[in-house]
Each structure stands twice: as structure tokens, then as C-alpha cells.
Length: 130
Image 1 (cartoon, rainbow, N blue to C red):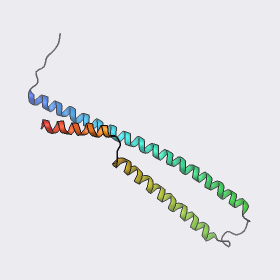
Image 2 (image 1 turned 90 degrees about the horizontal axis):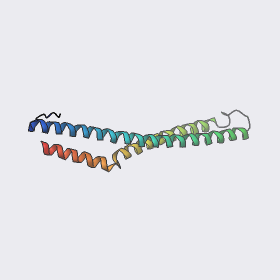
Image 3 (image 1 turned 90 degrees about the vertical axis):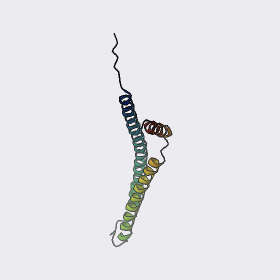
Image 4 (image 1 turned 180 degrees about the vertical axis):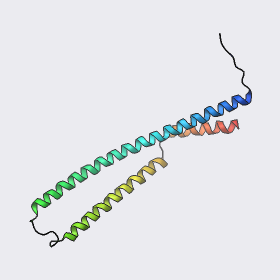
């Protein structure tokens, strides 16, 4: 036994519109999730690079400290150490700025053309339906 329900033309068009809006929202969500995953991969690789660089820097500092004579640092140029610390902070800020710019570039130049194409098709269908 099957049940048949009669749906008017306006109801069918509205149902079709609602389905298209849901499809559009799902595609947008997929697009954002994929972008998030790409950004997380970039963040992870940059964090690993920073970690390796800091380890190398710590090793270098330790070797320098062991090779330098033990005297008053301020008398021997403590200002240059402060300047080096400030330079490290600036380098860290530049790196974080580069990461943000790269993330924005990825977002702007999304390589996921199939999602864009599908979204465009949905917009065209919605425009045709009124």
C-alpha cells in the first residue's frame, strides 16, 4: 500500500527552494571545514619549524654561555643581549603576521573550485525559481 500526497505547485517550488538553501548551507560548511583543516596543517608545520628553531637557538645560546668567560654581563654589553631579545620578539611578531597573511591568502584563493561551482549552480537555480 502506498500513500500519495498531492502537493500544489507553490508548495513544490517552496520545498525545492528550501532543499537548495540546505544544500547551499551544507556546501558552505564543507568549504569552511576544509579551509580550517588546511589552516591547521599550516599552523602545525609552522609550530614544528618554530620549535626546531628555538631548540637550535637554545643549543647555540648554551654553547655560547659555556664558551664565554663568567663575568658581569652588564659590564660586558648587557644592552646587546636586550637588543637581541627585542630582535627575537620582532621576528616572532613578523612570523605570526606572515602566518595570518598566508591564512587570509588561502581563504581568498580557495582552491576548492567544485564547491564554488556547486554554490553558483544553487544560486542560479534559486534565481530561476524566483
